[in-house]
Length: 174
Image 1 (cartoon, one colour):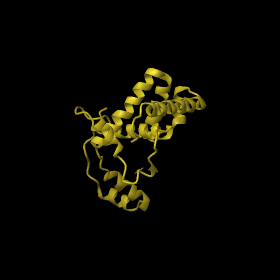
Image 2 (tube, helix red, strand yellow):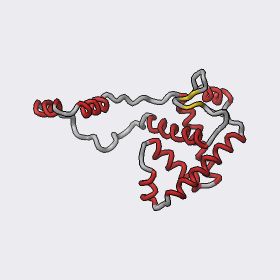
Image 3 (spheres, one colour):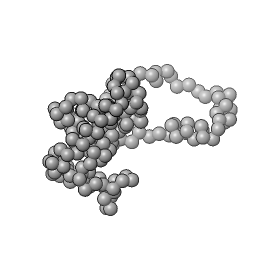
Image 4 (cartoon, helix red, strand yellow):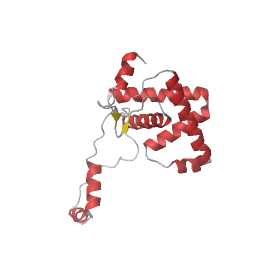
């Protein structure tokens, strides 16, 4: 990564050194590394899909809403109406170039971690992906037959290793 790109990533904060709701740390911490990895997977999910065949599931033709359907929808609770309206009006915002650069950088850390310990890299990747998609890590451990205590211990060890490595290489915090 060039110096210009690093400077660009460092400028992701506002003028007071805050990013989102949390203060930007002076040095890399395991919590901040975890946040960047989760953000990387969130950005990856927002990337445009490859052109080609449509994704499975929505191949039925659009249909008209009948009068009886409209009456039934009018009787829905207000919370349900708001939830449905929000879902219909959801606009998929594409990530900015800064977010994509941060994503590439963060995912590169996982590749480097894989060369150190493949188990830590696997656990950390699964955790960040599940956290980004708001899915249960406990269910993941059940599916894979992993002990949750061991899973979290490996994740903590991997995040600490990454933070120490980034600090040792004097990588700017973003």
